[in-house]
Length: 144
Image (cartoon, rainbow, N blue to C red; front, side, top):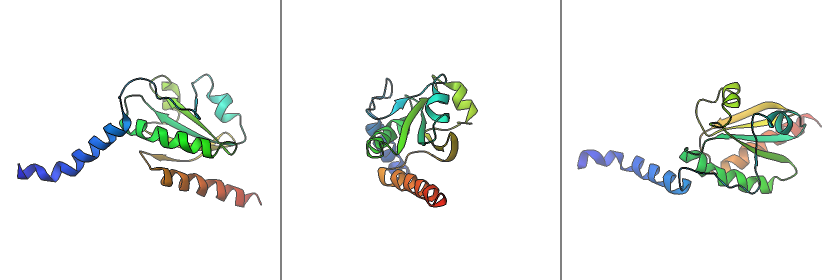
């Protein structure tokens, strides 16, 4: 039993992710994020001059399901400044291939239809908020 103690922190971390993610199948309801498909991506993301946060995710991905409420809460806070959308990669494999999505969750921040920056994996609310603010502020300062 002693030889397995070193694995306990990992087991607790995995259990926490599974608990936070809830059921691993089925839709993830978000009140403030728009579902985007291969057919609507150009209109909703690339044809806008505003900031757009794009979350590439899958229903079976625990960290994706844990990140979704974080992003949905921030979408309400950034309403009018940043548009938040999500792309289910199993339903939209063309977009996953186009943006070289190999691991999820993968989040991109677009400005004027072009990807500016991104991150991979789960981040908490404070980390995501700081990441968004850093890039929006840098862009605003460049345009003064």
